Structure formats: structure tokens, C-alpha cells
Image (cartoon, rainbow, N blue to C red; front, side, top):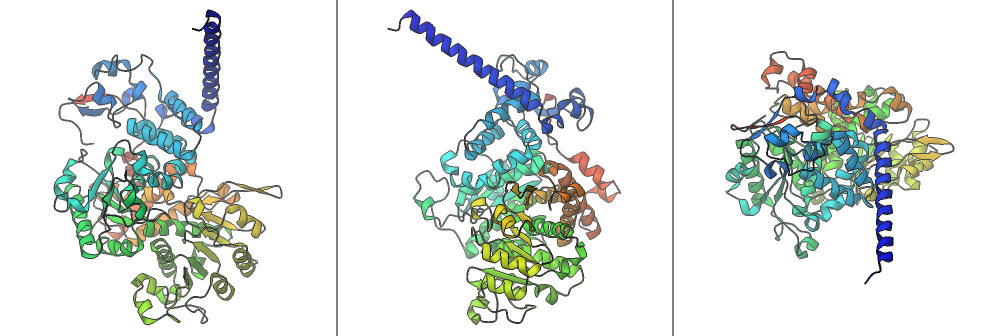
Length: 630
């Protein structure tokens, strides 16, 4: 047995440890409240401006049957320790929570202090997911406040590893799973979702998750992450969104052999059977929520464009990998021209090498090509300014067997037929193409790390002088990026205009700090979804996407340009999303696809969208025997 002396010493050590922990938390709290992003987002400022004083906010009505633990366990209604005493009495919570009533500021401090103490990004992703499952309002408020720090944790690049380990980390369901085994039941099963007015659905079949390939049902992490950004960055209320996986099997041997894989263990459906599953899902969504926008996400190239072509003229939808990425890269290209002293109209004078012939690469090329046509080029002239390279070299009809050319998708054939330089031949290497075509923009969508090596970058740079080289390596996660920002700076003597798909840190060189930009779809897709859904557009047109690109490019301030940026600072994402949403809705109005009565009657588009946007702040909670559909 321990002596009294040893027991006393142990107690003293524990007390000292507790005092140190308390002191550390006090220091962390003081430092947190002193952060610029926290000062700019204080509850007091919000009480006076964006959402009004707490007691004047529109109450959240919940079912009369929801009381006590049911309220705490529902992430849409739960405030945790922020429930006020009157709410605790009204909702049957007294005694179920600690007596201290915390402010949202205090809750944010607790979350961020704990998060920053975790050792790895995946651990942080899991912690944030657990917060998302407990308290959606607090989760989205923390993301809004710390979006620069947290966006890489809830989406790319961390979400890739989270998807790989989805089945191993699974704790509770979020979203809906439609599978091939549900054929004939989807119209019924969609009624199981409790929310009556879903406005945005993000759906994947898991066939091409980022650069990681076929992850099957594990791809659910992608729609969840996308919709977290829709809510936090775009201002769409969390009860109006639905993440979905359509599980048609997987061709990934590792998943088929994984004892804890949660999807169907069968080869992927293809052809007619695959299409029947997708058609039934789309019809089920439209039957229940006819005004809903469907965003297709991470479908493999062989089905992505055909699905988009099948639905884009029939319902409100878009493919983020094809159209969203294209619109984002177009925004970056326009801002890059501005960075080099050129006007947006000079886009038509550019020559572009696109490395990657998948849905993202072709989609980006098609978007920029259409913008060139809108700027005055003919279709043939615009196509001639593109050189698309894939794993076997330049994609070109000249030098390709007829059968191989016929096997290409129509959109790939368009970029393989006509070139401004007569020497272009199937299989030409990246260095060969740069040497004879002398491109002004080098864009990567290949998922091949280091593909833009020193020889490629230096040759490209030499050919564009005296202009600055524009390099946009879009592949993510970071481990699959074509070139790092540090290498691009070094190999171009700091002259590169750079935007990447994954985040990079600033680079110090010769006493100067170079600030990179992330060409992230989050600058475009939340605004597209917000504007199109609030305006209740019938479809998403190409002109609406170009309007989104222009709005994003114009959102870059002169101060940001002076720092070398070609995308806005991510801290301003809410303002950028609003600008994009307004541009999309106004363009939709011009195109005749808006059906929202208030807008058709002349309501100010910006004011109307801003009024309808969600901001994560606590509101009084009351019970309503009629429930709610707000």
C-alpha cells in the first residue's frame, strides 16, 4: 500500500498539473479572442448588424414532441451549453446540461483550442465531423470564422484520406445512400429524408474521388464536405441540403477485400443498367423536390459528360468537375491576365496547353474555349489554340488510328482535330508541344505529381518572355500536384503567375515573399448553387457559369493583386459567394430561366439573395405542434 506521504505527493502533482492546464486554457482563450478573425466576427458586432439582437431573431420552431435529450441529440437544433435558462425550462433541458451557459464565442474558443492541439490533419477532420454531427450551427460558425484554416481540413486535401478511411472511421450516418439493390424503391425511400424543402443535392457514385480513383460508397465524404462549404461559404441553410452516394458497386480490389467496407461488394454496373439506376434516382429527387439543384460530383470521365448532357437541359443541375472547375479556372485565367497587365478580352489571344484529358481537363478547356468564342473567335479558331496532352502524349487525330480516334468521347475529339500549329501530331511530348506551340498558359489536370519538372517550366518560361508565365497545376490532393509553388518560383526567377488546385504556403526568395493563390472551386460552386436555387432557375446555362467566372475574377481587389494573388483571399469567401450568386441570378434572368416570383416582379436581386442567405447564429428555439418547413 502507498504511504500517506506518497499519496500526498501524487495529489500535489495532480493539482499542479491541473493548475498548469487551467493556466494554459486561460492563455489560449486570451490569445484566441485577440485573433483578427475573431474580432471581426464578434457576437456583439453581429448583434448590431447581420442578424440582429438575439431576442429579436426569428425563432426556430421544432416539433412539439422534441424535448430533453431529443433536442440535444438533433444537430440542427442543438446549441450545447449555449441554451439559455428559459430555453432549458421550455425544452425540458434543465439538469441535462452543465449549469454554465456559454456564449457562442466561448464555444468557438473551446473548439479551436481543442482542434489546434490535435496532432494530424485527419484527426482534426474527424473532430470537426463529430462537431458537425452534434451542433451544425456551431460547426458552420467555426468554419465561417476560420475558413482559411479549416477549409483544407473539411475538404481538399484532407477529405481524400478521410474517404479512404471512411468505412474504418464510420460512427453515424449523414445523408442518403441509394444503391443498385434499391432499384424500384427510390421514389419511396426518398420520402425517408425528414426535411421537406431540400434545395441542393450533391451526389457522387464514388467512381473517381479526387485523384484517388474508385472509392465506392466511401466517396460519401465528398458530398458531405462540399455541402459543408455550401452552408458556411455559400449561405445555404443546412436543413436545405442533402449529401448522396449512389452505390453501383466498385472495381477497387482493396475495397472488395476489406471486411469493414460499407458498400456493395460487386463489380460496378455499366451501360444500360447503370443508367437505369441514375435515372431512377434523379426522378425520385425531382418528384419530391422539383425546385432542387443537383450537383454531380466525382463521376468518372466515361459517364460524367454523358450524364451532364442527358440532364442539363431538363432540370436544374451542373457537374462541378466539368463546369464548376471550368468556371473556376476561367476566373483564374481572367485574373492571371489582369495580373500580367492584359484585359479580359485578350483571353482570345492565348495559347493553352492542357495536361489531362479527363472530365476536368476537357471541361476546363471547353469552358475557356467558349469564353474565347464569346470574345470574338470562331469555334474552329478557338479550338486551334488548345493542345490537350494525356498519358500517351498529345491528343491529335493526325497519327492516331481511326479506331482509337473513334473511341474518344465527342468532346475529346473536338480538341484533337484542329491545331494552330501544323506540326502537331499524336503522341508529341509535353516538351515538344511547348517548344513548337509556344503556349502562354500551362494548365495541369493530370494528377501526376512533378509532371511540370524543371525542364518543362524553364522551356515554357523562355518561350513566353517578356511576358510572365501563367501556370495552373490543378490536381489535388497536394501529393498529386504537377508542380509545387516553391519550384515554380525558383525555376522562373519569381516571375510565375501561379494558381493551384491544392493549397501551398507562401515562399520567401531573395528577401521577397510570394503569395500563392488556390484555384479552388469553393470560390464558384457555392455562389452558383446559391444564386440558381434562390432564383429557382429551370437550368444552369453556360452563360450563367461565365457570369460566375467574371464575378469571381472581378472580386479580386487591387490590394490582393499587388500581393500577386489571382483569387480573392479565402477569408472573404462569403462576400465572393454573394457576388457570384448575384451574377448567376441576374444572368439567369436575362436568359429567361428564372422562375422565382419575387425576382420576376422586380425585386433587387442582391438584396433578395442576401435576405434569403443563411448565417450560422443561434436563434431562440420554440416548440410548434405543426413542426416547421422554413
